[in-house]
Image (tube, rainbow, N blue to C red; front, top):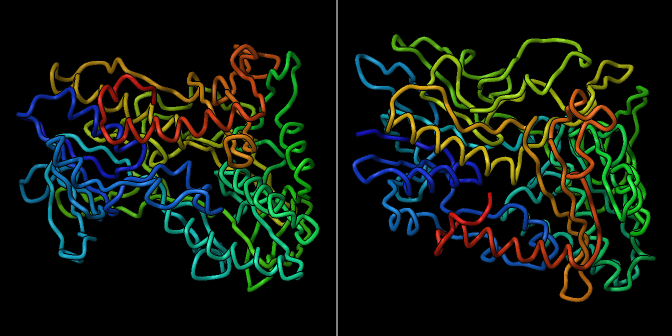
Length: 484
């Protein structure tokens, strides 16, 4: 009998748990540890943040589903990992309960295989004054998005009363990622303002750490659109111009005060930007889990890089940008020191950025870190589960299931408004996610599989995908036939 403990119930963790339970016999145990009582479909949080969906349309309770599936569920957060055990015990993870009835209690969960799919810590603390409860809002979780909508409604009411409003949306740290989510949000905010005929009362500004717009943390892309090849820079700038949104690029937000954003640009200049409403994406870090050996000595540096993300089968050698390769990227998400530990999704430490690193004249790094959300996380979760299943059934062997971001494509739908007849979205695919200039010397990616088209059909597709992926996550009939 094998016992698999999965930390996290986001896209990567929930996907891994679903496949583990489906394909392993009941004599094997699957255990899920997640601090939240709910699964949430994060890509739709932007619609919660503009009042187009309620939180119950983007979430559902985990406990009833896991009970039906036969998964042991703990509403708790992982605190410490003992990959060698302690005092002769099996390897275990120490967790602290977050549920109301057991809050603060701790327990040990032994494992044969551990999947670290905790996702990111939303590191608001890395930027002074950033985040809910401080000076900006967020759409990174359903409760944050609900709070954002409450604040946005106040801004809309002021515009309706004839009071002009300054709205700033973008990245809230010099090395933040997830530009796509912020980009979607500003386009949806612009849509809601336009729908109410309040454009003349709103000043919208996009602020980003990207060198050029449309970088999205993957070095930008060239896409096939309407038979022509164009850059995502043109794609992104066109969307902003069409929505009367100005932009500030190459900017690293350093501090936020009430109504004031302080940022530095690559030329070393420091500026301030006024706002009445601001949604800025924070930087991401690891979940803060510590690791100890059998004697109790701290070995966190063997499992994690300094920001807390987990080391996997990647090449972490420090080398110049020009020498980086797709071969540096992991394909099995297995920890090299402890081969029974895996880290799919945002929990793994990328070997390097995809976008070219940039440093200001003052020495401040200002560039996006790699995105790993959505489709890539789901694929990583699935191949992690399939590899663990084979290890349980066949014993140690070369892992057959692989999913390198240098050989994986991704599809993304950027919402720019909501409604059956008025909605619009840009549908974009890239292949591969990490550019391969050896194989595709012109653009780093296959132009045949890297394309984009805006329109109403894209909105319908995003709407359909919202329900399709919730169908899959809820384990409804034939869920395994739907793509990750």
